[in-house]
Length: 154
Image (tube, rainbow, N blue to C red; front, side, top):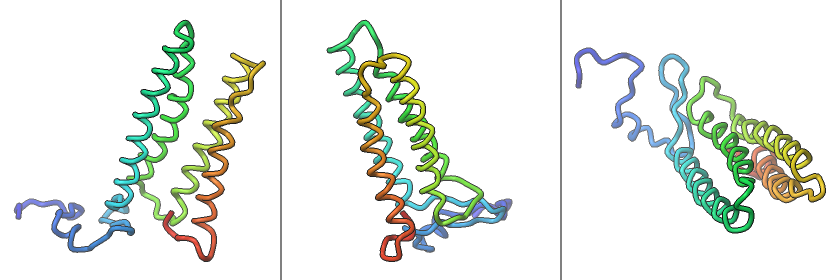
């Protein structure tokens, strides 16, 4: 052990011994460290983002090489991913914080997609596809967080 170790520093061994897979570890100063489960969840979202972004770019190049439409869903999803990443380290300890981050991203990104759709291709309302899919996911997430039988830490 280092002789000048700060009080708020938590060793890996202390963290491992606390066995926090679904709980967050609060260290001195009110900082909350993400659990292993939350970091894995972010990794899954990041992997899906990168894979689907690559597919969108490929489809864009193959179908409309003169217009880079793929940038819009990639930017929109990046905003949601940023909210998710932000939720990994926070000074708040609300249990339902993750849902509210997702709900905020849902509102901001879908408003952005609707704006883009109506200003670029108003004859074809493509925003309804991500809006419908994401609405189903946000309802399910809300059910998991707020139902009596659902998981409390969605």
